[in-house]
Length: 122
Length: 107
Image 1 (cartoon, chains in turn brown, purple):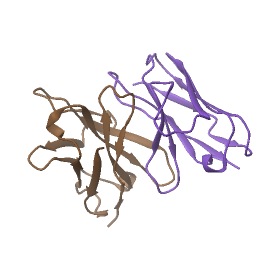
Image 2 (cartoon, chains in turn green, yellow):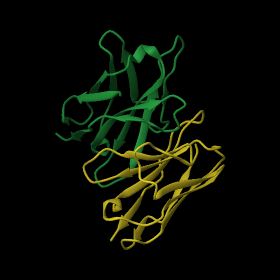
Image 3 (cartoon, helix red, strand yellow):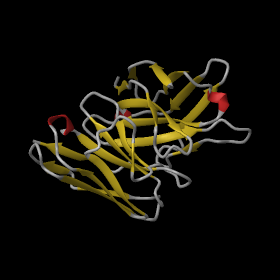
Image 4 (cartoon, chains in turn orange, green):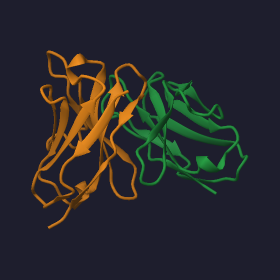
């Protein structure tokens, strides 16, 4: 079973960069088999898929076009971690951010992190 | 981008009711659709994958159907634990992997 432990600051100032890390246990991110993803949920709102990365020899990342200019997802195979960076944040980026390991070909199955509330505020 | 239209947005029901939630997709996603249940303060939990497959451990009163552009989640007999918000999500080769707007099931 894949377990995801999220970490990162809960408060970010406007115009700065939001950075979150997700430590994976129970699977190797370099072993393939999962789309390593981030999903967010603004307070009282629905779910928004941010993007994912799939470990491979070629670029395996894909981002939500609405965030593409500001987001990057990267994999650290030495630490078995996934990271999310979102630049130039505003109050609209205040949300609970989830790390998600979607099983490749699994039809939506996978594991979710515990969620991190990130508030953008001066 | 693929657009997801989930209906209704809110549903009031009683224990024992049969409940149906619909997810319409702007273009065919074959059977690449999942259904999730979310309770307040918790991460979503998958119920149905590949449109009609029941995730292990999920009660059999939940079922999914559909393909292409129209999908349905049915709860055959609503239980107290089922009052929650439900989301559909498409995935696969077409990005972004959009979620529906959600359906809140209230007492």
